[in-house]
Amino acid sequence: MVTVDDKITVMVLLHRVWKKHPTHVDFLGLYIPNNNQYSSQAHGLIGQFGQEPEVRVFNLHQGADPLKKEATMEVKGNKLVVTRGWQKDYRQDNKRGSDVFCWFIHNSGKGFIDGHYTNYIVPRLDSFLPLPL
Image 1 (cartoon, rainbow, N blue to C red):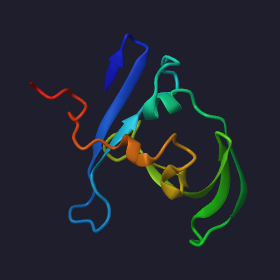
Image 2: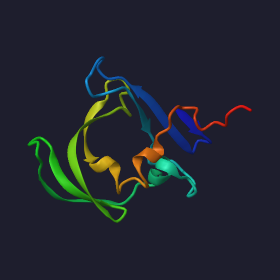
Image 3: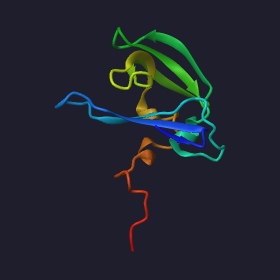
């Protein structure tokens, strides 16, 4: 956990999945409390969600999977197709997590995040550092 000036807290956790799983891979979970005091100049994924956007979910209906409802989510003036499913929340129990319902956004988050998701991928954690001369 990193805290800056008692105003901004970010927790990063490494989540491991089953060894040799055919589709799931280890991932970093980034957890940011709602009470953070980001500058209005913050950008990127953190800047977009430093202040929780206004969201409206409607048109709830049965999805292709009977255990997962589908709906329309309106956010940032965009209407997006979403599916409701289970996800692990590791904020309280960072080893086992707790099961919570989440809305999963289709189409790689298009319309929910600014730009294309590939804009946020870095090849290495240190790739933003200047190269030595």
